[in-house]
Length: 226
Length: 175
Image 1: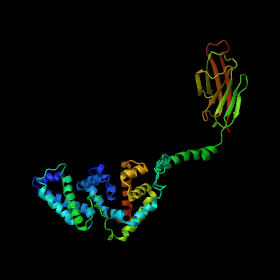
Image 2 (image 1 turned 90 degrees about the vertical axis):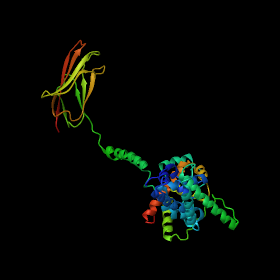
Image 3 (image 1 turned 180 degrees about the vertical axis):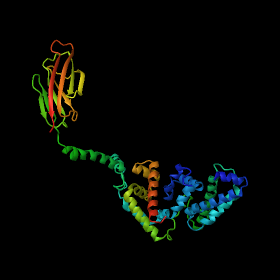
Image 4 (image 1 turned 45 degrees about the vertical axis):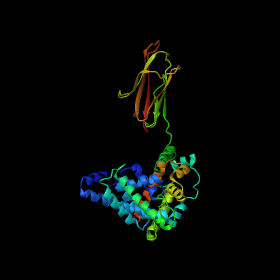
């Protein structure tokens, strides 16, 4: 039998071995011993050890060395402390706390030693101004590209579409209802890194609805490789 | 046990033998704890004989086990009374727990046990603290109040300490 038949009574086992039970509890446990193979085997197995625990002065002294201050009740703070740092070997427990610390330390390590050393990469800025020749940009297409668009014919309340097309007629960006203009008719458009290959691109802004003036304007820009 | 008793009452001799083998071993253990090394075997045997004589006709108030325990308790009580008459010293049944005889326990076991206790006192200090209080004579209730834990926690800590102690001793090959 590898299990106690009545764990409610079986839990008294060590208190029984140490003669620490009340008369009623002791009787209850002894009746239990007559019936429970597991508990009887356990007490028999530890019988000699229990005798030493109960009667040997050196053994008692070994326990006495462990802690001298026994009079204090456990305070709230010491209970809180014992939740995080129980009276066990520091390396064995509490695993959860050390795991949590690891979780905190790793992001800090990443932030300081990995991300902190990464250079801040600048974006390539291209200004698209009416009647100017093609804007030429040198640089890596691995950078983000910021298009600063000036559209003097902008009319508040009108709808515009905006498209960016490569020289091979691939549409890079198209917004049927572009609403990025401010009241002065300027807009900023960010094209994420890697979206543009070196080459010529045309940007077309077309009035779709509610206009009184010019309905379409084209801009061009050239990106050269390194 | 109760099922065995039913079978034994119905005439199953093997069940009866099994009951009394079990009871005799347990009675010996319990009697030894009460009266020490002197007469415990005789007491256990007497109690077993009484149980054997009466169990078929007896009506148990709770169950067979509790009744059988009562028989042993009565035998030990009588033994204590007889001793009192001889010595003139009054001892109740509950006070009959004498200090166990440890003179024949090997020094190796004791040395290993002390090693394990020291180890345990470092790694599971709560256990050592409770045992210390118990050595000072505090009852379970008083210990719980003193260290501000529930009785259930008290038993849990004791049993965990016991397991660690046993594990440590087993590691040294002594239990």
